[in-house]
Amino acid sequence: MKNRKKIRKILLLVFLSGLLLNGCAAKEGSGEDADRPTATVSIRCDTAVANGMAEEDKWKGIIPEDGCILPETEVEYSEGDTVFDLLCQVTDQYGIQMEYNGTAGKEYIEGIQNLYEYDGGRWSGWMYSVNGEYPGTGCGDCQVSDGDRIEWNYTCDLGMDLEGADMEDAAEWKETHE
Image 1 (cartoon, rainbow, N blue to C red):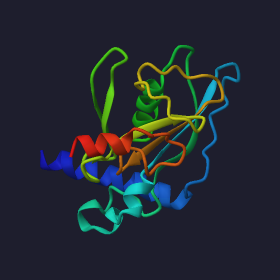
Image 2 (cartoon, rainbow, N blue to C red):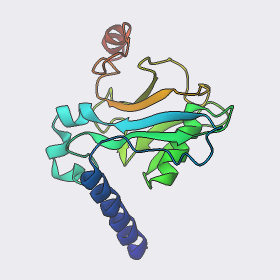
Image 3 (tube, helix red, strand yellow):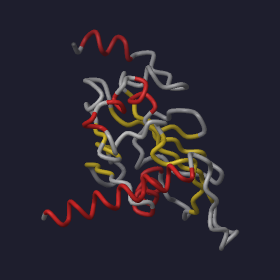
Image 4 (cartoon, rainbow, N blue to C red):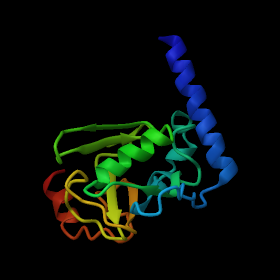
């Protein structure tokens, strides 16, 4: 058990070192099969950084100082794939921890890179956007189209701290659910 934890920590450090060396620049797709559709996926936790979480010792190695967990990365996918399918693909491919619950289009993302809902406060968790818009549907229900730009963002304030997230009812929700 201790060896597994050591191996996971080493793999995480190797992965993070690669991100630091490469920066948050876009990664190129393989281009092996030009007929397959592609989309771009990124994973960020800028709000956690803005709230000072990256400076806390318990988040060292989990929350990157620049907020970039996965830079914009072009991936090939199959027709019918969903945003959830692409998240699974990139987290598997790049060794990023991800946990979810639910099945059959009702998947809910609990944590990515060991950053979970509620870690950044009562109103925190993961949200996704497609081409700059937050669709308001589950990631397992949202089908991907060729050229889509999918961004996974960590929110600390029900999405009100994310650019482009139209969360007009969030303030009222917070007031009625204190």
